[in-house]
Length: 362
Image (tube, rainbow, N blue to C red; front, side, top):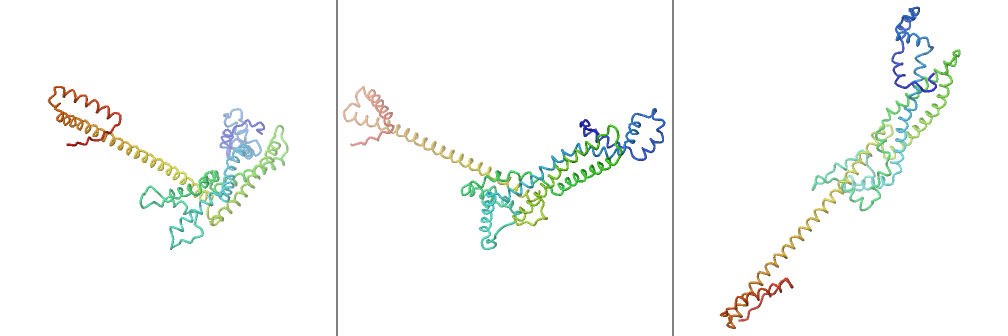
């Protein structure tokens, strides 16, 4: 017996594939007098065939090697159903969100079926398919999330209360029962072989009975724990299914939890899309404000330039009128006067940025 666990699983698999059949054993027995001349493969088969219950012992050893691995694969599935059932049953956030969904449904069906006390969870994911008549990119789910964010922000922590739903949605109960049944029958076969070997005369160096007895003790306890956990998981699942108005036995865990898993994904996606739309709107508003400010600034600059041009033209006209009155129009220094006037005008424009047009009194 492989007491030290020296034989790897893949080697045991190969040995099981080449277990000699009865016809091969009979043929080898007929030529056992030619043992020395046999090929190594034939001699190996001959030696194996002389071991009492060789195939059963090999199968027991292989099951022993695989047992812990199989339990490690099965147990998380059972725990996912158990914890997933508890989560949907106890989640306050889910309950409140479903109440809001029901209120939405009653309002939308006002006058027809607007006094419903509940709805089938299978219709939960139709919310994401109900699109706005104004904007086809907006669904009822987007609006629902907006309302929930404003009124019941804690409800959107749904993923924290339903952490095991994605894993539970992957579990097929039929397949799980089959895996458990395989473990049960395999363990039973090892127990039967152990009882048979106990009834046989002990062989020198054969440690099958002692090694397998120890394995059966540990494995039976471990498997019993899995069975108890499965019974608890099934009980909690039945309660969860009935709690949501579904008929127990007609809906499997992957279908039941799959509805919630799909809804959680849709909520997360719609929440992110709402955030993206909000950011896009804020960016568009920011750009619109910047464009308005830029337009206003350009208009102010245009008015200031026009005022400056009017001031310069008005100043020259005032100089001409003044020169005509004083006779300076005939003065050779009139051009100098204009330059002085222009300099003064520029200084006034720079200081006040806006100069009133001179009123002419003739």
